[in-house]
Each structure stands twice: as structure tokens, then as C-alpha cells.
Length: 447
Image (cartoon, rainbow, N blue to C red; front, side):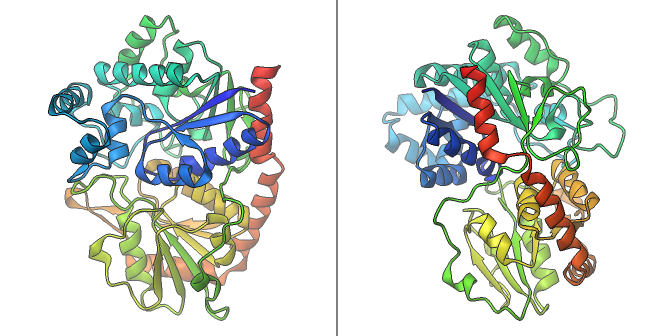
């Protein structure tokens, strides 16, 4: 039996959890132990519901994510174990020293993983070094035999530095052989890269230098979700496609009020994900624009809208909801998509795969470039359409209401979108999904 540590990019989203939990469940069935490191508030709820332990490294970013950065969080940290003000003072000092000046990206146009890493803290050597050290300590302290990572470059460095077997599960556009997130344009030559900073840290661990961040996400075994038609990579890439990886806890069902919705009117599932990543601060990856756009476009349409936010509270500025809208914090995704005639979402990879898996067409409002990449792939296979928000002053985004309404009507009225979604989903299933991923991960260490 092996002990597997599952690490994810430390964001307060459910996408990477819906990808990692099914594989964790399969490994558990095979007799292995799995623990997680994904401390965001919403991921933590999903991990707990699935019955797995969730560990938090000794690092300020992880503590803030676990505590939820808002008024009272410092008090809760003290109450939870940081019981004296000397400890709090040292913690705040570590936070100020380790965190880069700009931790959240300031533009929705992120060209690839390397560019995103530069915009999200990896230009700070202190931040990179302390992040890696915290994760190395976690790997050692928890006694992990194998690290299975989902898009966290610091965890990949930690596993490689400790000479632990590393499996990475990534999207195709995060692989070094891909054209990145904005593959339909030529990449500018002068984008910032964290490679020189990261290489100084890698040298101290006796690891080979990189030319771009994507190289960190290549493990001893690299699994790519999707398939060549939806997630293309050159034949030279040393990867294995595993199809769709989606999570729904056994025995879960939709709330009764959703089950009893009228069969005579279309059901639209509108999923925004996290409306606001930081309270009081607008970031380019926020999905509040999805909420505002759906309400403006669908309030007077003859449809039933189920609005969910993935365990995130609904912003007060969208209340009260129109009469044809109902809000639920969280629903089992596969069941909800199967009950729906149309999905409207933010373009997250998991949401895209959910629609394909259930044969449900989509209208996507991508909030930044990685999500626009996913949206364009869905449109390319004929399983949906997308409307890109327009950037306005002070970081505001706007979706043309008439355009969105027209696209929704088009997709609902044309059965070819659902037919193509189902055809694509059927092909995806042939790649094996979570059971095949677990088999390959187990084989890595068992030979």
C-alpha cells in the first residue's frame, strides 16, 4: 500500500477537485491511502464531504486560504491554534516578506502557464523558495510515498527535490509542447517569465534548469485530461490521455425542487464558480460577470434557471433574483447537467467536460484566457458557443445582453449542439477516465 499526497494549485475553486477526487477514490478502492493539500474554503468542503484528510502546509498563503481572507480571519487563526500575539506577529512578518507585491493577476490575458506564473508570484525568489520549502516539509511530515499533482508548480518542485515519484494530471494547454492558453494568436516576445528566478531555486535542489514553467508540470508520469480532438498536443509529447475526470459523490441527488421543475420549459443551469476571489478587490478571474450577464439576459425569457456558485455566497448586488431564477450553493454536477437543456458557465475545464460527458450543450462566458481556450475548444467540436466579456474601465467587465440572449436562443433551438456534445462525450469515455488514471499511477510505483 502506498500513501499518496494529492496537491492542487491553491485556488478557491472546485475545478481541480472535481478532477482529483475521482482518481483519489479509485486509488482508495485499490487499498492505498490518499491525503490532500487544497486548503481553499470551497475545496475543503468538497474534500471533507468525500471523506479525505486535507493538510495545510506551514506557509502564509495556505493559512490565508484556509482561514478565508476577510474580517475576523486573523482572530479565527488565533483561536484555531495561533494562541499568542507573538505568534501572530511572526506570522504577519512572514506573510509580508514572502508574498509578492502583486499576487493576483492584473489582466485576463494570460498567454500560457509561464505568463500566469509570472503574474501570480513566481517572480519573487523568496516566495518561490518558501512555497517549495513548505511543501517539502508537508511531503516529509505526512510520510507520502508518491505525489500526485494538479497544476501546482511548487508541489512539483518539492516532489522532484525530495526524489519522490511524481504524477502530474494537467490540461493539454499547460504542457510545454502546447501553444498555451491563447493558441489562436502569436505569443508576444517580451512577456515576463519566472524561469531565471525558479532556476536559482532548482539549482539549490540539484535539479535541472527550465526554460518555462510548464516544464515543472511534467512528472515521471504525465496524464492529460481529455483526448486529442478536444485537447490537442503533438505526437512527440510524452503524455497519456485519460479522457474526462469528473466527480459526483455516490448516492447524491438533486434537491427536490430541482427534480420537480417543469418538463415543459427549458432548464438552464447557470454556474459562475467563484464570483469574487478576494473580498473588496476586483480580479480578472472573478466570475461575477457571469451572474450579471445571465440575470440581464434571461430574466424575461420563458426558461427555468438554476443558478449555482460552487459553495460560494451569492453577491448581494444581484439580489433579488428574477422570478424564473433559483439559487443553490452547490449541486452534484453530473446530475444537474443531465437534468438541464443548456449549461451557461465561466469556461472552467471541469464545467466544459461535464457538458460533454452528459451530452448537454453550453454557452460559455469565459472570464480569462485559459477559460477562453476551453470555450473555443467546445465551439470547435460543435458542442456550444461562447461570448467573451468586454473589458471596461477599472477592471469592470460587460457582456452584451442582446448578444448573449440571441446565442442562448440559438443553442436551445438547434438540436445539433446537443448531438455533437453527446458524440464527443461518447468518444471521451473510451479513454478510461479515473479508473485508468488510477491504474497508471499505481503502475508507476509498482512496476
